[in-house]
Length: 423
Image 1 (tube, rainbow, N blue to C red):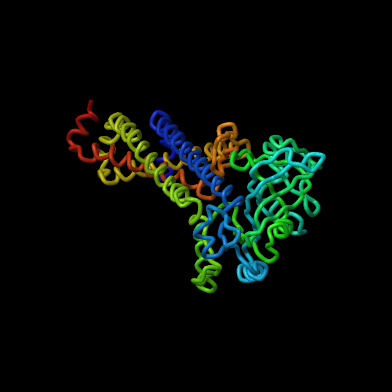
Image 2: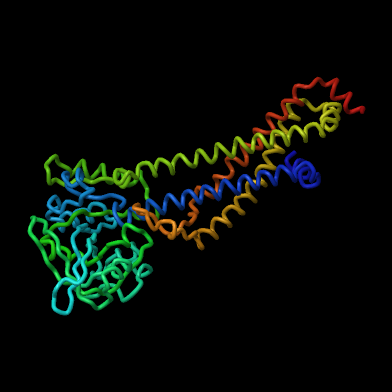
């Protein structure tokens, strides 16, 4: 029977061509939109994770309540011991120490007096150790505009826009003025090794990046850090996996004291819960919209095809075939059409998505006044789900459309079908 139906689909192009084209286009758009939304929202979340939140983060209880103001006085103490413990208990996760701080960046003239000065947001990263992963994670090599990355102590990176505003170039000396962890004043000289540009206004206006050892020295944080970030071994944030790690850590180590460590997930920071929920809901929304739209279109197509096939149905009834068997064979035929369209549509959608995943869409010029951490290039992202999500509307819509259209024939009187056969 299946072989017979496939021959009918191939030979009768008037019956199969339009439904296959419709299913192919619908599945192609379904796959592409899924990959696009996964890529855009996923990149936005990954960008926040890499620069700010991590997949999970260990901080003190008090720091958690005041994260927006980056309170150095509420930082983690004994961070080396905590980091070693985390690496021992959760070896599949990459753990890194970070320090977020703020202050003034002063540019002296030849006499040592202030020539230019600006407000800076600083980030202390592990840049000089042999096994550091931060350079690749933040893509500092790609962001580098002038000079080079820090290779020695007391060297910093400054955002290119900020450096231009201050009138400094690689090799110049700048002075950081800020507060230590204990509230004292700190004044430290650094050599500008290079400038970077991330394409994000909030970073490009006044960011400085230095090795975390230099930041600890400057801020009086010898064995302390603002936060310890954890990155799981997946390309994109896995909320379930992060939740398991956080729950396990908090059950073992979290206390109620002001400076006791606590682990939080990415979704619990910077209002990212909304974006994660959007990613989960967008898949269901896309599938529902396309299933519904394709079902309506294929229902109409099925009705038109059904009217043309009244004679065929009458002949099949005349030779003793039951209505139920005819109805089931039409349903099987529609599933075959849906399968062919789903395969071709998925291949086309994946091909288009792959092209955009490689090329990307540059929107950095639209983010000049943005205060959110967002990537400057939007790309699609092909995941395992993209290989089968198109089959949901592709198969369901053809089946649903045929079920609705076939009812009109299934409920007709046999006598009427014989009469139409005679005509």
